Image (cartoon, rainbow, N blue to C red; front, side):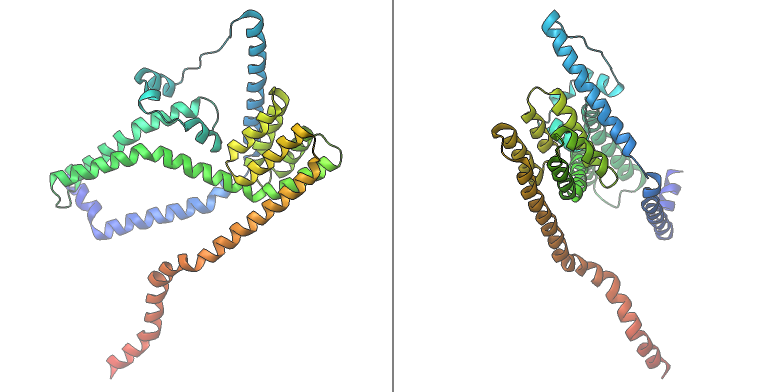
Length: 324
């Protein structure tokens, strides 16, 4: 039975059909993704509201702790948390920068931490088992046992680093989405500040305006508004904004806001300069991508366009030559 399945899967015609079906599914999924995920604004703003409630709750608990000397908490033990705590994975698979990476990827709370350690435990075992089963049972590709074991171990190592790679890619995509709308958001923030609004009200207003173009940026501005209201040190709220986005443009704006809070410098002028610098950075990034486009198109041109061009040009000449 297993041999029949292996022969069916490894047959060239069936393998080509499987690859074609996967490509068609990927194309349909890519085209339908915008329709499926039409609007996540309400979901993201709900997460921001939950974060605001969490800050309010922590503020109340800290006040009660000062008065009674005890903190009250609620134990929410999920499956991931139970496994991670039972196996002590936080020490065995410790990543000192994990919380920072999760925040930059838009994942907050303790749930994603336990999910990450759980994935780092399960992924190597799953990939090693799948690779070993395929190489030792289904198709060995005429390889020695040591070579097959080496490939399976390589898959296990890949599974260990896969959650970190996924987290890094998620944070990069989120940062790119934020920076696409950040210069325009700074212009709106400048208009709100110069019209007489406070910085908290300006952040909240801009968050509502930019939610249609960048949900991530609206989420960050709303979180900054909540932290400005509940954190004792306002400077910490601006630094948290810079750390969550991990971009030089946002860090420079956060530094300007901190200096304006500390020394009383004009905030409108600083925001105007920062908005211009961020627009220049966005244009420079677009020019960099445009300059790299010819080099990236070289391989697709050689692989896909030139063979077809040769067939179109030389095909009629070959047919006429053979007909002579």
